[in-house]
Image (tube, rainbow, N blue to C red; front, top):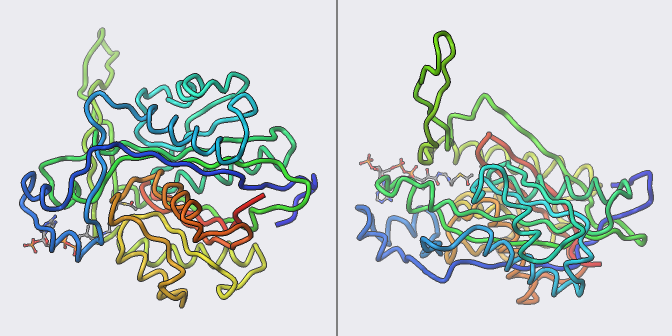
Length: 334
Ligand code: ACO
């Protein structure tokens, strides 16, 4: 995708982190009435990492961020902007500035961005705009979520799906090319009831004629079948749109890197795009669905395993609550 400034985006480092504690499907069947066979065959998930009571989103996010900075070979002081894609901040006012402090990125502005499981792709596109306009040179993009805090642990239709973790990438200005080749972002609030983590307030009258609604956020509720249908229909479509903008064809994709929600969704999307299974990056067997963290964790593992090499073309797509969905076609590397 061309831009007027002549400044492009490069992807120079990745990192990830997850809680130590692991709950496998066998142990999950002690929490709710389920089985390894049911979970594995319907979702591809075998285990998930879960944050312990004293652990915070900030910790995992800062660790992932530090790992990404190390790979990029830069220090936290070089970072101009931190974008934290999350729906589960430690503090509803935002957690990005706490991560900024934790890693010592004292020059960086920092803010949270919420687009559920699409957060990382929305964040990547946002980061690229700051770089392409010349406003910032170095952006640290983090996707992190601790959904275990918000899952109904009595609801077997949802609690088996989610896990906790964080992933990060360093995006830097480049004068030799633009590695973000094309993107497409979409939202449809009319479908928001498919997947919610909604605030529910009880009316409380403060004085005559002035009442407020005070309460708390309710656990995740999901219409699994509608989410499945939505993802399988919309994700191939949005990838094709982003490919068109990148002036590329499906054959030119080296890797399909989708939000890790469910193996059946990954398989169905790959099928619809006629992409062979070898090109599909998948790690949900070990992590479950980590929401905004799932794409950068899978990306980081593929980079560190040297499956994914500099110059490879990655078709990445996020999809989830909102509903929101989006695709970014990018090349790894400087
Ligand atoms: N263990 C055992 N049985 C279960 C479980 C479980 N964990 N969960 C549901 N069941 C039962 C149901 O009670 C139901 O039994 P019944 O027929 O006796 O009532 C039966 O299994 C089938 O239930 P469905 O909800 O119809 O199961 P489905 O085949 O749709 O699979 C699933 C559920 C895996 C969630 C599927 O709908 C799906 O993959 N949806 C996509 C949703 C998704 O990926 N969400 C992730 C979050 S959103 C995001 O990240 C985009």
